[in-house]
Amino acid sequence: MKVRFWGTRGSIAKPGSSTVRFGGNTSCVEARSASGTIVILDCGTGAHGLGQDLMESGVHPLRGHILITHTHWDHIQGIPFFDPLFGPGNEWDIYAPRGLGSSLRESLAGQMQYTYFPVTLEELGAAIRYHDLVEGVFEIGDIKVRTLYMNHPALTLGYRLEADGVSVVYACDHEPHSRQYAQGTGTMSEQDRRHIEFMGGADLVIHDAQYTTVEYTDKFGWGHTPVACAVDMCRSAGVSRLALTHHDPLRSDDHVDALCEDVRTSLSQAGRSLAVFAAAEGMVVELEASSNIKEEGDSESFSAVAPIEPALQDHQVLIGIADETLAEKIQQAAQADNLRILRAETSQDVLGIVRSTRLSLVILDDGQVGGNALETCRAIRDMDIDHARDLPVVIVTDADSDAGADVGVTDWLIHPFTAEYARTRVRAWVMRSVCRWGRAPFPENEAHRIEALKALQLLDTKIEERFERITRIAAAAFDVPIALVTLVDQDRQWFKSRFGLSPTETPRDQAFCAHTILDTEVMIVRDTLLDPRFADNPLVIGQPRIRFYAGYPLTLPNGTSPGTLCLVDTRPRDLDEVKINLLRDLGKMVEREMTATLPA
Ligand SMILES: [Zn+2]
Ligand SMILES: [Zn+2]
Image (tube, rainbow, N blue to C red):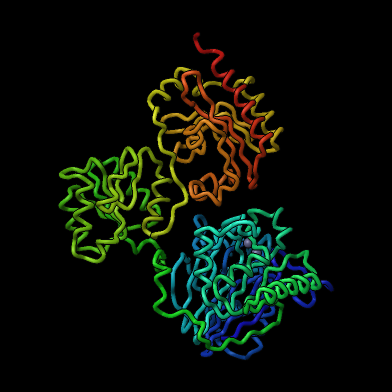
């Protein structure tokens, strides 16, 4: 396999005298197998030169594949300038991670609206096919492609290409999951270990290395890796060669040289064999088969990975729920993702369908007619059919339970939930991926708590200056765009005061504050994207794009918590002890106002 770098700069193109050697164009790498399959990794501004090169090759029609890691500008801006897409007769396949919102095609068309560019996506002359990807394995000609989600503020995939007996990994843009590990002061997390397995034994890894460890201190959550950490990960992964890329736009050629020199010195002192260099525009790396290639049979480490499916519509979900309203609600949530739905009302029907049909998910409920959901689940597991043993079985219930573990229940869907919550979780079960959005359990004193909340007579009341004053002070004192006094009601959270936010309430399954009231201490979420309870929450992936949350659980004299005083920011942050005390003090002022009108 032959690899050629066309763009190595991160974030923004930076041509000029200080970047002449390593290049000013943004991300674009060409990989060709010996038999001539062309795979292009990212289409930043470097794609312009690559396009010209392909056109001048005289090959017609031009056929190739573009793997996009994510749709940040610096990875797609070359697409409108990539000439082979304009030539009639040419055929191109474009792949990118399936977004939660707009499709790949829409994202690309967005940057080619008339305001920005004179030619629309529809006017491109080549035949273009779009493919939405999730984690998994697929093939492009003689190249086997594996994908893994990277840790980046946008939905991002890394790619591992295997052909001709060699393997190349492209991991850009990515930030280590453990911040301490990234800084060199702590150990890696489980997810970092997955990242390393993904790169395992590669002949060449092209890795994000935008920052120095010192610069990284100010760039938490920006989605990039410090150089030293990229080296450490590749060393752990037994990689042969590491190409550092996504060079910071502020990095001069001399500085890049100095960084590489540092890395080599420390590696040679430690007696390590990893070869490290900085990717440079125009550089070609030829890879020949070595003993390093991962064995074919080594796919166990990817067993959590779903095979790539063109769309969810090929998946069938069986809803074994007798309650019509509940079944309908789940059916609608699943149909929003084009899943095919089968329905059954009795345990016998459920078992009959599981036996005869290839399913991706079974959802049962506690109140199922003609049988008990746990028994039905056990009967599914006892079937002598392979696909029944690892079929996800989920039970809808009122309370979390660990009783299902021994009969093989995959997960629980707990009341009450919104359609959106059900949809997100169903999608994750079907794709066998991790859903990073968890609804808070109920506090033990829930009935008592709701009673006390209602007695405050504050729900759905008018705006009051005595609370407005406090959220205003909080927003200013903590320099956050949003500060709220929230009341956590049965199935919603309602805002008694909301500085910087327009909705008056959100469903309870989306509420951060529903987690806060479970404890008596301030709850801080430094970066929602790194927190498995919140990363896929609609308030994180959509408006108001919460990245930071801190909440003080308000406490009434009877010990229950009606809600919180909380702070929200769109940037990852932290609070020191002084600030936590300040939040607590402001919270106590809210408590005082709340109870001021209570009968003695
Ligand atoms: Zn980037
Ligand atoms: Zn990016």
